[in-house]
Length: 459
Image 1 (tube, rainbow, N blue to C red):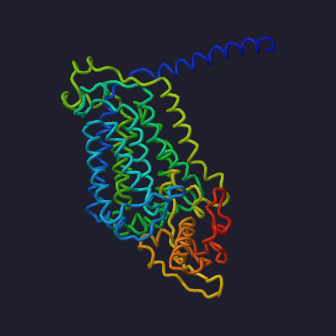
Image 2: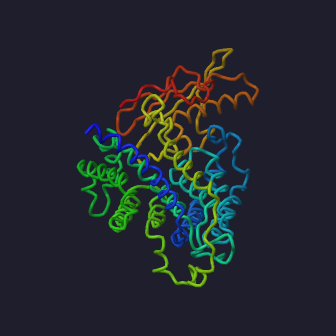
Image 3: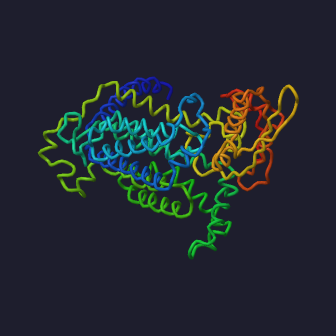
């Protein structure tokens, strides 16, 4: 046995290069770009629909015209909404750019403009953060640099589009969508979700008037079953969809899961975004079996079209992108404390539907010279929705304290100490204090190693 061991090492070494070569060769192998063309069309069309929906519901007015103060992301303090009615022009331009992307007119330029406008609008105020906004920004960014095919494109004859793309282009788009599901499942592998069925027990009980199923939704057992099924779905679906054998079952689960969640919970367009965009996991040529040839390019046009040309280093850059997006959502594990309580690293980590928080915040401004204190009315600075979101999120409470202090200075007053007495309930637990009420939050800097003034979690 001892004599056989040395002969295994060289064989293993011989296999390593051949595996890497096969992987690179497969990554660069051309695949039909038809499914990516449909993906591009659906992405652009969904953004147009989102703009129309947001505009029609008064979202632009409520989010950008009514507020007088905004909660900036760290490092993006200079990003502010356009004054007056300016944001209506931003959203109008976003709709035009997204429509151009959908129909395939100057796709990369249209995608870049749509990405810039969409990301700008949602970077103006972290109050409005949603996971699918982040996803759409990333996908629009990928559409800016990737060739997304000739299907449903009015620019099929241009030299910068083609009927085939390197396989890794398709892999990267699938990876970005699959990652949302997988990390959504990873986030559910904790005690509140699995052992206490929280916050689903709260949300399902609120749907007690649901036709026929209302009484069943109030059963505690229903919440437990749905919690475990939801975690299993999120963890497995990205692996079920790529396989031809399991794809029909997987996509049926996608449709059923998202239709149910859309009906039970108020989560905007997220379910419809995922139902539409997960079609990219089907065979690359699937649109050719369903759509007219003149929509996606005839056989003659396919032969005439040149394969998409991309520099060799682009694949290495795609790998860097993938590694970053695998690691970045895990940063919350580097912070001390309970991420559901502190929310350090919570955003941009694909934690979906894990928190039901409600809170009340009373902030006090104290004159450092006289010691005189006054209670600050949050509604004098913020909209009701901003107050609701601020009252449970430590970084927004700190930012609001700075707003209060800055406002006092602008009025010629000494910069006050600003303390906060914040009481929050997390996933149905009794309310407890969130932050240390003795700390001057207006003087607290942004910390990337935790927030020591946040009190221990009740979990």
